Amino acid sequence: MAEQLRGLEDDRALLGRTSTAERVSDILRSRIAEGYFPPGTRLSEDSIGGALGVSRNTLREAFRLLTHERLLVHELNRGVFVRVLTVEDVEDIYRTRRLVECAVVRGLGEAPYALDGLAEAVAEGRRAAREGDWKELGTANIHFHRELVALAGSDRTDELMRSVFAELRLAFHVVDDPRRLHEPYLVRNQQLLQALQAGDRDDAEKLLAVYLDDSLERVVEVYRRRVGEDV
Image (cartoon, rainbow, N blue to C red; front, side, top):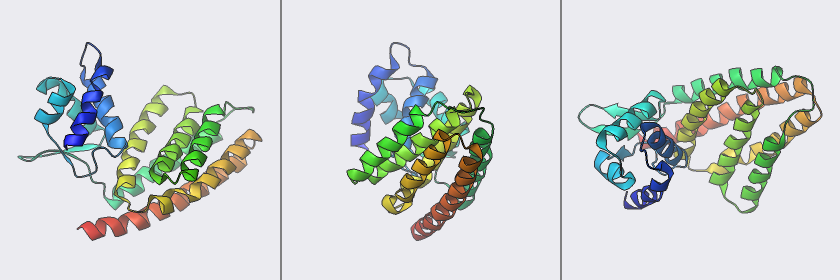
């Protein structure tokens, strides 16, 4: 925990002069998504509040916000913990992804589309793969899907899926073989990008639906085995 707290001290500058609960929750959400606080980690009010230089009330409100987003869980008489997802949680996350992401692609207007963000996410994934940084490849994959959702031009959809993708990262951090999990989707992200560059929404939606179904099967298979080992 000492190393994590030193990192949080570096985040103090992000708070500025006003230490609002929203800003604290943004920092903690990012740290949880990065695997800084793995699933099952107990979050100490005293230690984290001291590292960030915020009051206990501000930190508790940030914890409450992240609990509402299903990233944290409060256990009576034990404290606040980073949530450990169930297999059913993972399946529900993918149901939501399929509903939203496929609808975004289906609802696109006439080409050309603003695809620079998607192209950059594919490039990020390639760099991570070349460097053998498989967790970073997972981050690039999430970036790709955030950019895909952003094509809808809806702040509400972006906010909804920000929480969904953050939850998904909780599952990724439990997996012990990130290369096996993420590497196959680098090529498929490129295929999706190419379909959208060609203006073929129908093909892109079909590719995406199969992609998400395959990803669900792979993640659940690995996640069920991993969680089962830890029981």
